Amino acid sequence: MTVTAREKGLIACRECARVWPVGHTRCEVCGNAIRSRDTQCLQKVWAWWIAGIIAYIPANLYPMLKTRTLFHTSEDTIIAGALDLATHGAFGIAAIILIASVAIPLGKFFAIAYLALAVRRGATWPPGRQYILYEVVEYIGRWSMIDVFVVAILCSLVQLNVAASITPGIAALTFALSVIFTMLSAQSLDPRLIWDRIEAQETKDTA
Image 1 (tube, rainbow, N blue to C red):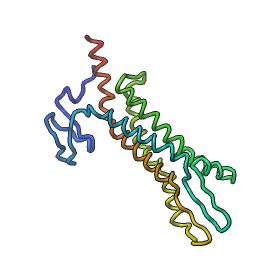
Image 2: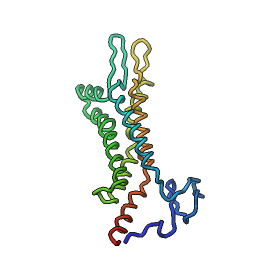
Image 3: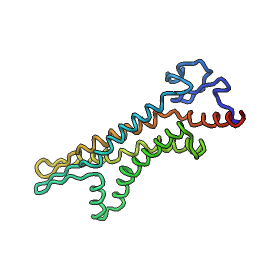
Image 4: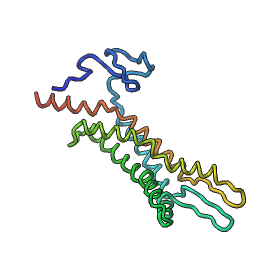
C-alpha cells in the first residue's frame, strides 16, 4: 500500500522541495507559501491553456519576420520561412524550426490537456508516466522560444539602413505570448494531484 507524506504529517515546498510538518504555511528556506494541495489549479491550468491557444493561432497566420532590401520586401510566417529554408537546402535548420515552433508547442497543448483531464477524470496511463510527461513538458517549455531568439538576433545584426533591414512581425509577439501562457499553464498544475489518484483508487478498492 502506498504511504503518502500527507499521511505521515509532512508537507513539501514546491519550490525547493524542503519537507516541513503539516501546519507550516511558509517555507523557512525559500520563503515560498506552502499548502498541501492547490484545489483550484485546474481552473488556472485551463485559463492559461486557452490563452495560449488563442495566441498561437495568429502566431502561425501572421508574419514572423519582415525582410526588406532595395528591390524586394518579403513577409514570412513560421511554416513559410521553414519551407523557404528547405528549398535552399537548409534542411537541418528548417527541421529545427518546425520541431521547435510547431511540433513542440502542439505537443505541449495536447500534453497539458491530457494531464488536466487525467487529474479530473482519471486516465489509463499510470501516475508515474503521467508525472514523467509533466516533467518533460516543464523542461522543454524554454526551448519553444527559439524562433523569437532567432528573430531578435537577426533584427539586431541585419540593419543596413537603406540597403536591407529585418524587423519582427506581429507573430513574434503572439508566439512569445503563447509560449509564456503554456508555461504558466503547466506550472499551474499541481502534480501532487496526479498521485492522489492512486490513494483514491486504493481507498475504493479496499472499501
